[in-house]
Length: 255
Ligand code: PEP
Ligand code: MN
Image 1 (cartoon, rainbow, N blue to C red):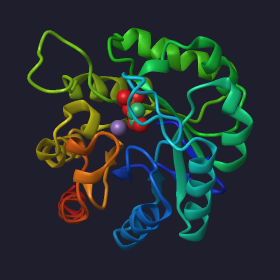
Image 2 (cartoon, rainbow, N blue to C red):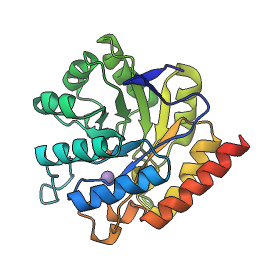
Image 3 (spheres, rainbow, N blue to C red):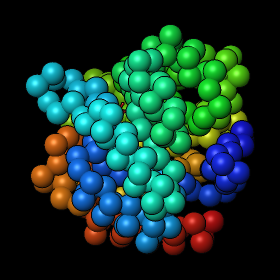
């Protein structure tokens, strides 16, 4: 498994199950601070939050932009957490590189090879989400664009794919995530929130990822999911997240 260091900390420790959690979109300071407090309480080291949101509809909330990046950076620093956010365009590279610890490439940008080439030159961990209609081979080749620039701090994220099945938001392809983790030496995480689109499935799919030997999961949480500006239906509230963390810890101990 490739070793990914950030400020002398080894992210993705061997045999660990690493949780990244936070809101779909950063909405305000109060929510983000509450989220950070919850993560610290539960031993989670990485906080996520989108500031530049790529929404299917131009009428949907597009994120707080630069203000959101600065807020995430400040809260992460105050609570000694690593920050994770999506980069959607090369134009935001300087800003995000300066303030954020781990960059996320969303499903819509997995095929944005110019962006991948730019990020390949950075010395920062990159989470590469699988394109919503990408084969495993295409996903691995996208990772090669990062690797060819010299960036080996690559984490792959299975976030569900689009299939003939429409019952859930996406089809969670856990088997492919395990396959990639076992055969290619990448740290692989899953995103049970986007993979299912349903908060009632997030806990079970997270635990399934752990049992399957995956290196971690990224989970969307919100203090008041019913009021969220995006993806409310798939975000866990704090109580549900704490319940999940208890089960994650229990299963880790059995491993
Ligand atoms: C996200 O994780 O913030 C996100 C937008 O997910 P995806 O790109 O998988 O839709
Ligand atoms: Mn989301």
